[in-house]
Amino acid sequence: MNKMKPSQFDHVVNFFFFAAVPLMVGAMILFTLWMGMKFGADFEKRAQFGDQFGAMNTLFTGVAFLGLVLTTGLQAKATREQNRAFAEQQKAQEEANRLSRLSLGMEVRRMEMDLALRRVDGAATEAEREARLREVEVIVAKAAGAVKEHRTSDAQH
Image 1 (cartoon, rainbow, N blue to C red):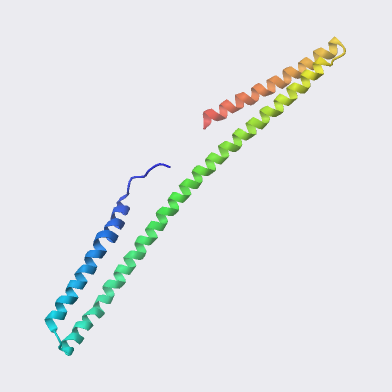
Image 2 (image 1 turned 180 degrees about the vertical axis):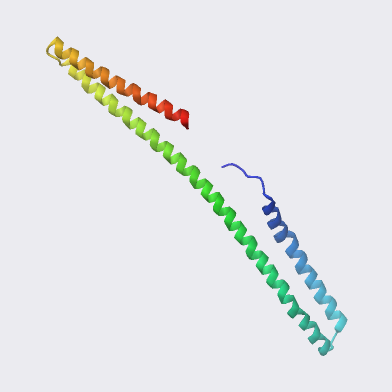
């Protein structure tokens, strides 16, 4: 399987999960500790401090939405890669089927040739022998046509 270069989208996802999220969580923890030391045991001020977290609900919703958008992007990318792999697999299967048909056709021609040669060997008269040899020539011409058709289709692929 061929390796793909990381896209710009991959860099954004990596930055988001490995840099931005830990930095944001760390900043929130530091902010909470700082506010706790600033207000101490004053419950009225702590209530006001708690109300500030209500405003952060919007921030958390935005982060969750961003995560949803990133997940959707990752799924779309995976689907594109899966479709590409499926197309390659289908093409390989079609080629295998074509080669199998060619092999089967060649085997049929070989069997026809063997049968025709036996008829030539068993011919009672010279005229019958000549007729059987013409049958062999027709079979050889068909086989040559199949080989030529195979080469033509190979050139197109």
